[in-house]
Every structure is written in structure tokens, then in C-alpha cells.
Amino acid sequence: LCETTVNKDVRYLHGNDESSTKAIPPDIVAFPNETAAVQGIVKLCSEYKVPIIPYGAGTSLEGHITALHGGVSLDMSNMDAILEVNMEDMDARVEAGVRRLRFNDSIRSNGLAFMVDPGADASLGG
Image 1 (tube, rainbow, N blue to C red):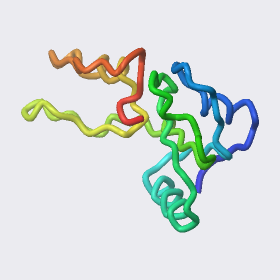
Image 2: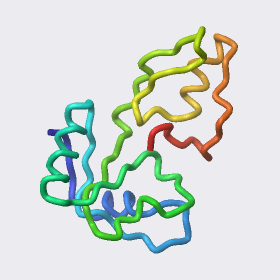
Image 3: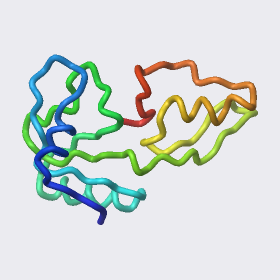
Image 4: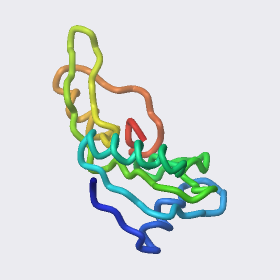
């Protein structure tokens, strides 16, 4: 479905964020490039009752990427397309891996700004 790894260092990175909680790595990290890959991973995980932990930029302060029960870390960083910006409606469609600063740079020339600051350069969907 997509690139995956069980590399210890990569797994540790995906189970450790900016929070004070103890890092608990997932069993595997998946790097989908398209929606169909995400759908396939979710379907398999659902069928086998495997936890899925969405991963954006790893900037969480709450410890939500800690893999308490193992599972698959779904790293959305490869899905970073800005699909559509609607000036009239003042909304946009983006993939989950789009990061805040790049999104702001892309809309600034239109006089817009994404004022929600999820912290650091967090991804918008992770």
C-alpha cells in the first residue's frame, strides 16, 4: 500500500512528542502518499483491530502520538498538497500533511491568513 518501516529510531521518533509523557513507539510506521493507501491501511487495521495513531509533525504537547497499545503510526507528511483555496468562501481543502507556515505562505498573496496557530509549524490535519 505504501512505504513502511520498523526501524527502531524511526518508531521512537513517532512515539515521542513535545509532551512530558514517556515515549512509547508504535509497532510500525506507514508513509502513505495517497488517499487510497490511507483507506487500505485503515481497512486492514480495522479488520485486525490494530490501533492507528495519526502523525503530523510530532509537535503535540498532549502526548497523543504515544502508542499505548502499539499499532500503526500513520505519518501523513507525504500528503501535503494544497488542493483548493476558495477566495469567495474563504475556505480551503488540503491534505492532512500540509504544514501551517507553508499554507500561510500560499494564501498570503491573496490577502488571506490562517490565524489558527496549532503550535510550532504543526501540520493542519495531524
